[in-house]
Amino acid sequence: MDYNRRAFLTTGIGAGIAASACNNTTGNEPSNETGANPPSNDIKLGIASYSYWHFTDTKYPMEKVIDNAAALGVSAVDVLHVQMESEEKSYLHNLKKHAFLNGIDLAALSIHQDFVTPEEDERQDAIDHTIKCIGIAHEMGIPCIRLNSGRWGTSGSFDELMELKGIEKPIEGYTDDDAFKWCIDAIEICLKTAQEMGVILALENHWGLTTTIDGLLRIADAIDSPWMGILMDTGNFREEPYDKLAQLAPRATYVQAKTYFGGGEWYTLDLDYNRIIKILRDAGYKGYVTIEFEGKEDASTGVPKSVELLREALAQ
Image 1 (cartoon, rainbow, N blue to C red):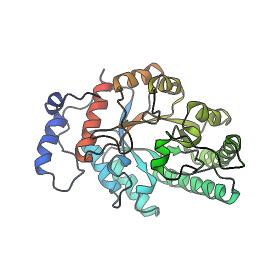
Image 2 (cartoon, rainbow, N blue to C red; image 1 turned 180 degrees about the horizontal axis):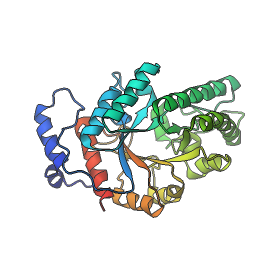
Image 3 (tube, helix red, strand yellow; image 1 turned 45 degrees about the vertical axis):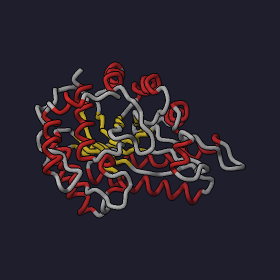
């Protein structure tokens, strides 16, 4: 994607980045210069905490993610569960309070689980984990959880999975039909708690069974619950994404927007966000779009660039 560097540096955010490049010694904090307030529109912009921590050794504190979101003038933070320092109620309550005092919504809790296993006790572990995370979201006032289907694991490492573009062969002796049944049955169990606690389970196009739209909708269509939603990730359709995003957008409950300044950690997509925002608006989407910055550039500049990119698209 072409990015007009000169135009960027003349904006409030760009000028702030130029200044912070000389003054910022701690890394990953944005400039306080955010420019004019973004125009009012029907879609709210947020930042995923994953943008500041790509599963490296040292976790980036969630409190600082909230501070950064407030400094950049966005509406929300998407909390990555494994990035949290604790599951103790005092920690959860302090994050909720910190977000409220900074005018930030906690829009979603992005969790990991895997229902694709022939072992019943392993599926139960994934169910128990999901139910526990529903409770965490409820405690924090978070209305939505990112849900995974899971995958066979026959590709080995995540790097190998990316080489296969997210599609794996089943374990010997089993079929994808088995995996879809396991996943649907497990989600239906989790939805009982989700409905009781008022937390939407939003199934993402996130590798494994949900790598394709057909796979994702096979699960979603099999479950009749108003608490079953769909998370549209703009960067998880590796090829010809726009027709697929247009197909998914009318059913999207929540949206994550990938950006790749500095080149992607695993791959880079040339995404046209003017086109994507138009797709969302044409579909009547009025929810959150949270940025998942997945580039190799330092987050202290990559995230503000991503915010500016999405703001420009929202302003069209």
